[in-house]
Amino acid sequence: MPVLREDRLEFFLSSFPRLRIAVVGDLFLDQWLEVDRGLDEVSLETGLTAYQVVRKRLYAGAAGTVLANLAALEAGELYAIGFTGDDGEGFELRRKLAELSVNTGALAVLPDRMTPTYTKPVFLQAPEGKFIESHRFDHRNTQPVSRAAEDAIIFSLHKIAEKVDAIIALDQLTAELQGVLGPRVREALTQIAASRAGLIVYADSRAFISRFRRIIIKCNDHEAMRIVHPEKTIPFHERIGVEELIPCLRELEKSSGGRVFISCGAQGVLVRDKNGTPLLVPAIPVPPPVDTVGAGDACSSGIVGALCCGASGEEAAALGNIVASITIQTIGSTGTASPSQVRDRYAAAFHGAGGGR
Image (tube, rainbow, N blue to C red):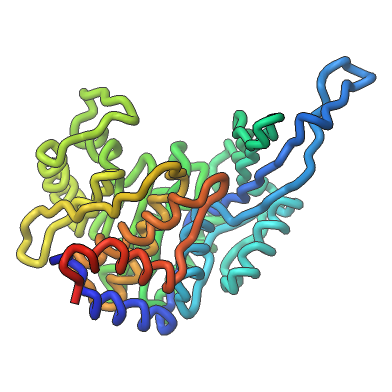
């Protein structure tokens, strides 16, 4: 019997259009440049190859990926809190958010910052006709966020907290003061969570998850091990056993004072069940090829949406797993999952194994 019954899944999905969710954090523009190597030219000035871009694909990335997944799941009202630069990339990012019907009223435009951007060239290889991803170009700010910008973010958080069911904090950067979620904003999230019973406040951070307090946190297995056992060096693609992660779950719960989810890649999500026992909620296996870029953000969208509807930890983790299993099958871009796709994936995964009713 799956931990998420089919009637519960249907209840969550049917409730999503009533949800109001804010996402605060680092918003990036994801820019894919498709290059046809058959059109290569030689620069007359330098003698170097001039690659010819034949198509450009743009998406809202980082915290925007969470918003895109929530929009695909048909969450009712979505709000973005953060900033862009006053540049072309910022214009495109805001346009992409508008296409998702995201409210950007709390998204500041800062002339002294550039819009963070991941530029990803992909090269068409002949005669195979496949696009091969090349080295990525990252556009990031290297100066600390100003106190005035932080004040504006904190003000927006307090105002939006009055009208939403959840706030998701997405910390993309590994330099603490260069992004949206610095120490003052983290403290504001703690205060908001303490003052508003019933509000879901949830954070996912690449480098600083252990610094969030008294809110729900999520990290992956390697991040959890790095926080709790910094003396251990584990290759990124090496699997970490659940027996090693359960002590990490306990330590993170103790240090954060809140509920903890640990995503474990193809193994699933480790969380406490309704009885307080650590439980690995199994992932939904899918055949290759897969692209795991954005899988954690997709999982978070499912988790938070379910929690807003009263799900237990294991139910939320199960929905997060289903959503992620769909998005990783989108190759060459960051995928999303619709309610109909979630229903189909659930049916394929569980009806043949005794059903989920």
